[in-house]
Length: 157
Image 1 (cartoon, rainbow, N blue to C red):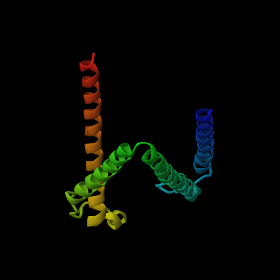
Image 2: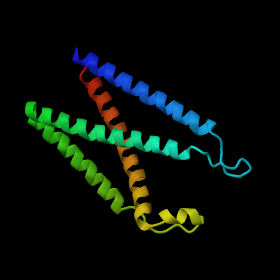
Image 3: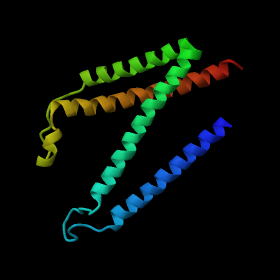
Image 4: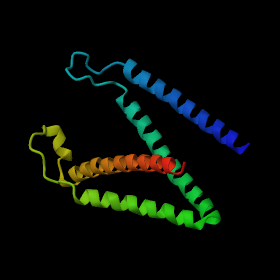
């Protein structure tokens, strides 16, 4: 019964957020532009779209943290070894971010326009390298896990 309630709640949540998003995107694109003769379109409702995006993003992060702590507490009661392993994975992920940030290149770029110079600092350039390199490492780990699972399944037959 509980699974059905969870499934219904998550389905309704996704449906409501999706409908609101479609309405906000419709308002954004259908609301017009500030100056139709301008080379680059400046939509009237850009702030509405950005605020909605921020709201959904922060609600997702809050839900992720709260539900993660809740699940960790319940797993810690029933299976402490599994709970410790999940903390090890979290520490390894933090270590991956630290290492990839450390090896990132912070040399300022020279071919950017004036608007981009705000983010042409060592910190932002190293953060960008960190996310790109971490994504590559995680992608390779996913491929390795898929290959390992496939080989393990074949060998167990």
